[in-house]
Length: 389
Image (tube, rainbow, N blue to C red):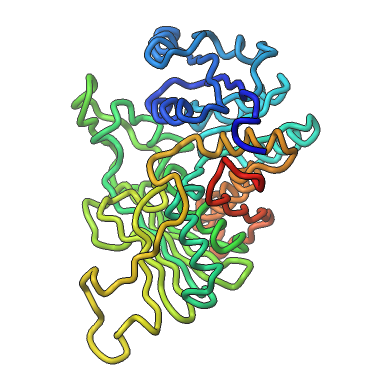
């Protein structure tokens, strides 16, 4: 079947905040997806979003749940509301695709997965950046054995919070927020996609500033109280034996540390974005690698210039911000009665990993991760116009 043979997948959006814009822009490019209604707690916000993007109906969340013509709810509410909205969507007989994190309480995640199974519905969850061209290329390199058997992985985000660019950053500093829960899903999801599920974790964290000052928009100069840790360090062991570390921080002004690296027996893959945040939080970008055959570190000082790196050819599409790609894959999954690649099971596993990292300091050691996750299949190179979706 080709993309044009998938009938329109009708979606109701709940949560019309800042993140909804990129979803609406992306979904407009996918003829298979039709955003037919949008809702939020602020009716004026819903009406403005509907008018701007040509959405047929601005309404309340309950009206979306009650509409039998809607196939799926796109849940873009704040993290604390994710579980409640997703549960109501499933109870109303609709598939659901949610922003990250999946839930802020693991019991809610287990309940959502059980409810979806009982009703024969699908749950998809961001991040879907691992479906982008950059990460599909990394997976291809690993599958081809370019760096040999993977042995380790490192992820790093050093930024000074979101209050410099987000007009309403409050929820980032409340329960369910913080750099680990906000940024960690991008990096951990990419790790599981590339290296498989995680077996045990440990972590340390601290809060550096008790208040943050909003530095943009109508609330410029207003102080926000901080209730969560804002600098997180973690270690983990994968079921495959690979070991890893991760730093996620809102307390770092600048750094030259690469955003993501995978170490293998015969080489290294590196994501070396100059931006303090973007690494796994982006669909596109260079994939750099060095192997024992191309590197000279055994014989002379470690190369520093970019000309000394091999740049992987990106053979996949979606080399731009494509948030909502996971929703498109879910639409095909619903048609073909298969699991979506950005699945609830994957998201729940990542949530358990993050919960383990948060709980570790109080429990004095490594936390065993009880859940597992299917490793998502790569996208076909010509997705969605493919017979092998």
